Image 1: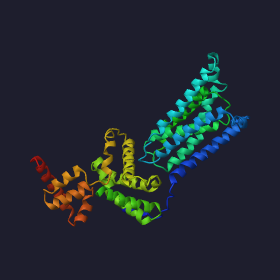
Image 2: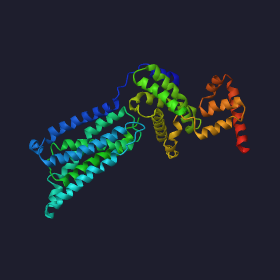
Image 3: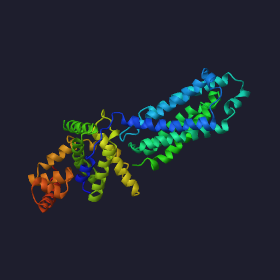
Image 4: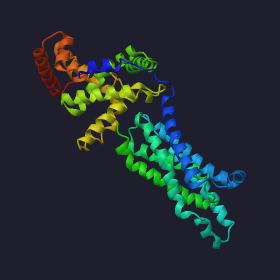
Length: 213
Length: 181
């Protein structure tokens, strides 16, 4: 086909593009994936029975502050990387702050606990499944973000994949908080973060294969 | 400044296209043909079928992914990023990885920039050879038109274009050798 004909056919039926089409598309993928994850938490894992009283406590909000702030940074970075000329700017570096903050709190917790109790604090009751659960809960959200990216234009595929994986991991972890009764900062810092990094790693590997356009 | 001016003009077409104006959209895609052709031609070195393939792939991407354009940013950078991605994707598919390292620095080349020092050097050099040869070289080597397109534009035969280009290049080489400046 010659280029003139191509241009004519591309311009034949032009639909207006809404102003925030990119954000809408990402939001849609995120929410669709999030709803699946939420359903999985509700049906497979079960919401923790003491959720209401826990929401009046400190640790529940500490965990949410950690996972949600990471999720916001990663999502902002993912949305910038959805443009061909997009630069992540400082969003990925900003994620160091919640990690450092939680590490400081974990340190304070340990200082307030006799060293004999540290291991129990670190492993909690669910360390064997926590990272795996966070990782699995990230998958529907990751798929949602991949769907969003299909119509967008990432050009740094490995970085975009890793960032989408991290965002999915952090939002998955946020929803996992509805189930997980663990209370120590050291626990969250270790096992939650590991699950999120797993999701980011999978995104890093799959990005160059699945995000091509 | 020419570059500002061009980017603003194309950006206005882009915004009209985003608002649903098909004619503006077509005008934008048509205006991108020449810079895209010369961008790919310079990097693929004369494999014209590949050049036109990549031009078309880029136009389709510009069309399908126009929602990713941020109106607050220059249009040239956005189109360049797409063209560059398509080029890298082509290299990757053909298993070629060399020659990619120098791509990032080329970012400025695609700005619709006619005012760079290098360009004005070329212009001054072209002023020293016969007018017809200079016009042919401008059309075929700088703007990236094909022989047929250049012939049509300049109103001369295709063989005349080829001969003039050949003579023009020879004359330029002689000027450079003579220590032009």
